Image 1 (tube, one colour):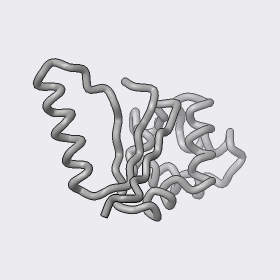
Image 2: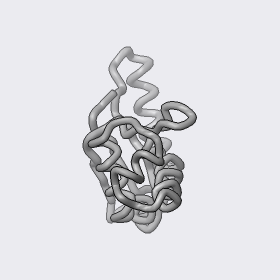
Image 3: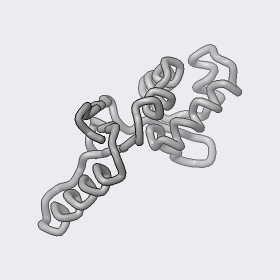
Length: 119
């Protein structure tokens, strides 16, 4: 797995284009190891990557896979708030659930792209 996750702001057509490109590479036997997540608009991306949620991502990456309760303790934050942030980050596919009680961040870098010319 790649160490970078790529975030895009774009349309469903943009996402479909990346999917078809990856599919063709896979069919040709070429490696397809880049992770991509597309958000419909900038407010959607920014709501998922709020400052508190960025702190959650950094703390989880630093501590390694852990439970939400342990993560909240490390961060010295309220369990309920961390749980809500983790749930949103799982929903956005920025955190991976490894088991019923353990979550992880499987990448170290975020590359975000916003095309100002896209419709």
